[in-house]
Image (cartoon, rainbow, N blue to C red; front, side, top):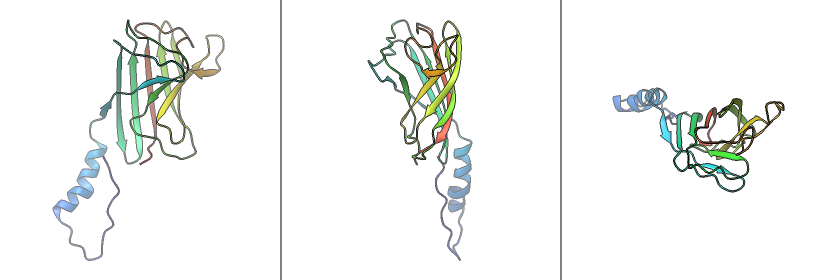
Amino acid sequence: MTFAPRTWVVGEVVSAAIMNQEIRDQFNSIFSAWTTYTPAWSSTGTAPVLNNGTMLGRYLKIGRLVICEIHMTCGTTTTYGTGNYNWSLPVAAASSGIAQVGTAQLLGTARWCGEIVISSAASNCGAFLPISATNTRTDFLTATSPETLASTAQVRLTFLYEAAS
């Protein structure tokens, strides 16, 4: 990961090790492979349980910028709980006073497109999708909105945000 650059001192002798740490290693972290993580899936009501479904998460952190993708596929034994769904972030969001927005897709019996909202200082994000095919106002993704979730339904989230540190 990238880190804060050092403060150089007048007359300092710059060695190869210092140059590698301050320049090469910083650039390598920008171009390195993404880091995988397993997001936690939660709700504001009864907790959902993925069981034999799959949850994949990955992110790239450059300084305090975090680029993240989450892909969840429901299984035959997934239980959907109640309430509004949330997914954990790989690192906490900055306390910036600004909500970050990304993209959300639900692939069920239909394809639904919406957005992700990450509140200031949050540790999770929520997906907002159209309420129904005839009501395009958005609301939280739930077990029954915008459609009833079932086996093989997929949730795809892509977003970027400022990390707390």
